[in-house]
Image (cartoon, rainbow, N blue to C red; front, top):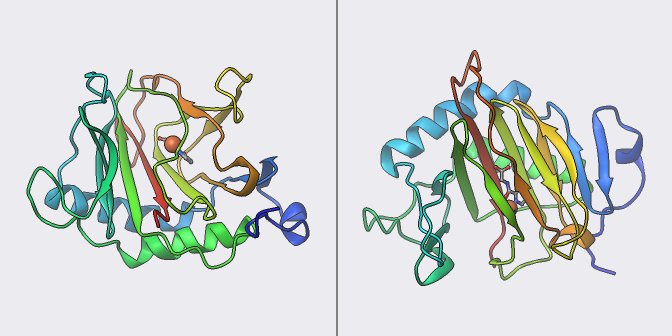
Length: 218
Ligand code: MD6
Ligand code: FE
């Protein structure tokens, strides 16, 4: 059994924490008090490393626009998926990870039973209405012992959450402004995706959804 398996205990009975499956937790509104600083930091990151639509190895343009912060950033092109220290657009290092990002990632991981989560990469996703993320696994990280922490901001989205096998039936989870999902342990390689974003206008974020996913890549 992996050492990162969340322990059953206090986290099971705290309010606003929903256990999705072994190793995966939905922490509703966990980021709520930090949203203003998270949004300000995203603006600052995007000024240095702009959102862009990456190309998949199969040659498709992703509908989700992406950028990164932290020591490593996730990129995709015709050669495949990988983590890089530098932004291929500018040739510069990715913007560093803001302190409020690392702090929220660590405290969310802790709330889900994972101690000392030190992410070295944060992928920032931007969805406009119609944008979607097809079913995938996050498996480009060398350290699969660490969980992934995902923070949702802005318009709500339906998150698909399946299992180890691609064809496994998926549950649908509505992720709203300030919600955090943590997953790792036995759920670390579960398939997941995001349904096409519905039209809407969020009072603080506008006509978009922003998502931060924190990873430990090595
Ligand atoms: C998103 N999230 O919510 C995309 N991956 O916009 C992910 O792909 C994801 O939320 C791994 C763990 C949590 C996630
Ligand atoms: Fe993912």
